[in-house]
Amino acid sequence: MERLLEQLKKAGVHIMKNDFDILLENFNDELNNSSEIDVLINGLISNITRSEHKKILLECPMTLLNNLSNTKEKMKIVGERVIFTKDFSERLAISVPPYEVWSITEPRAISFLSEVMGVDKTEKFLMSMRSELPTQVNKMFTVYVIDNDPIGVVFPHIEPETDQEGRIFWIGIHPKFLGKGFGKDLHLIGLYRLHHEFKAKSYLGATKIENLSMRKIMSANGCHQHKNSVISLEYSL
Image (cartoon, rainbow, N blue to C red; front, side, top):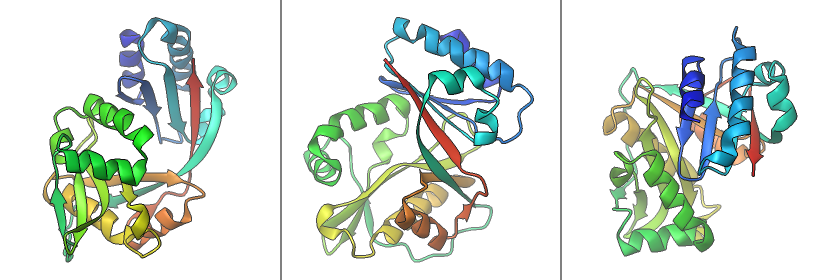
């Protein structure tokens, strides 16, 4: 399994792993080695029963997927996402909303996250984050606070094995503050921390194509939408 993953990296596929899933990612429309990638992904699917992972996820443009015949046959299309990017070559001259950075181990952080995302999802989410980003996880939990009230949470980080590419692991507003226009400020806090504290050179964000509110938020915060979307696929045991 590890040998196949290393070969996929050499073929230009970005790989992320946690204790449950393997995520494969390539946003390049034009690849000359699509047949090699197809064979390697097929090998992963064949070997997943021998690993601790239960799911393989893939995100790529439709133009690439159309050249991955075995992959397209064996993996199920589960969605489509829009990609946004922002260049941090110029300093962000913004007034950032108030925020605090909490430890993921403190009770108030776990309690608040459970209220935002749902109790049944929180434990697996935190385990995934610790597994994927062990060196960054303790500085990611960023809470938007107004008058001592936590409004929402955003998890900025640097994507491993990239040239300081900033991403947001997850973002969410507490249910009682939904629909009040706080999403833009929460996302802006994430961008600010990526640029000023994580020293990101750029930002890459993705959201489901039908998530118009998040698309508007990223556009409003100066992110550029890519022309082509990416297809999300899944293979699970």
